[in-house]
Length: 316
Image (cartoon, rainbow, N blue to C red; front, side, top):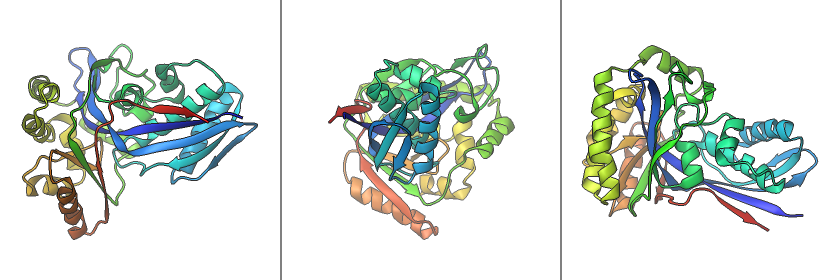
């Protein structure tokens, strides 16, 4: 019996772009794929749904049960690696698409990544997770027309289809240091409440953010310009919905951004923070971990590179 192994990247979600909507579109996102942490599952045809291993077994189980009902087939999933949920690194989308891809390959369903995302309900706000699963690299999506999505809502509560990718580049060969403090981010009803309380975002913030993305962030990726990339990261933290997200942690996240000379951003709704460096990645990781420990939080450090390939599928 053929076994299928699926390995997915994680992702840094740098920012949502437009939660004002005055031009007739909402959302939009920008971010990039990471080699680590990652999700790897080994799957085979089965007459029911069985999941073994992993810290997110319940999430794998619920996705697999839903897809089993859709496709009328079972599956056995061995979780070989996964990572923390609800910390800003996009595990939900990667789990959903990894399981959907396993069904797709085992039963020769011939579904596109976009179709799998629609079936599993991913990409309803930002399309970054779906895009990095398919393509890897640095990606920017164009959000949703307000005709399709007239409201402000996080992906887990949105019925909109995944947005289209507008820009995709290979990410430079810089070291990415990701530090995840031992506390949960904002998700579920708490995330919904953020959208309802703070949207629409002032249009001037959206204009400033778009200016930074177009004239500093994108050129820095294409031109391999680490200094300007870092400057863009710094500015983005204090604009639009990203500022709202960082504000939810009070002085904890603002403090780490202000304490160190190198640029630090928060991924998605956090609490994971990241910086991008060309040297001394290990010492940077120790410093950031030490900051959280001084504040009373254990923290996990990932020193990794961008993933420019997206999900990988193997057969055995």
